[in-house]
Image (cartoon, rainbow, N blue to C red):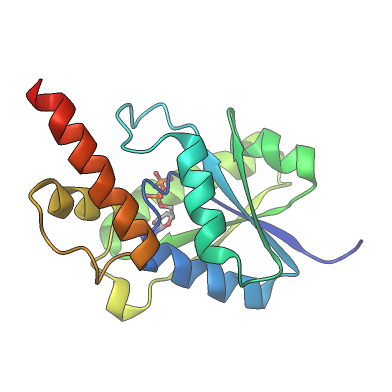
Length: 170
Ligand code: ADP
């Protein structure tokens, strides 16, 4: 099959409305979009396992036919080569994202010898403030995360903190 295949890599711990917005917009631009949960060494403590994150992403993207979800332990450029993708999608929320994102994009282009390029989508204004870490911060203290994540994800986050809270107390 021809067509342009794009990857949307990230941690998605957990997926937010901001991510979903980027996925929907990317799905209109590219023939196929694979959301790829990467094992992130820099972020040592994740709330959800990679498998849980994959399941959550599948759940919230099931109505978009050209979107699939996968996970990979390794470098994005190796995954891209394996599946034959030449585009990586990343989201930009604010200037603060820029330096970090620019560095990853340049590195991926260099390491892949120009085969993997990055396309940036700027956030929709209503999600500009949204991040997975904000969701976790709010949920830790029992705040309302319903403006940030779909109901199925909210349920899982609340449940996770409930069981974690129990464990932390013992
Ligand atoms: P990573 O750990 O790789 O930064 P994240 O799951 O935090 O992964 O984010 C994946 C991508 O989605 C990043 O490019 C990030 O900038 C983007 N992103 C996160 N939240 C939003 C949002 N609210 N609007 C637009 N893009 C976002």
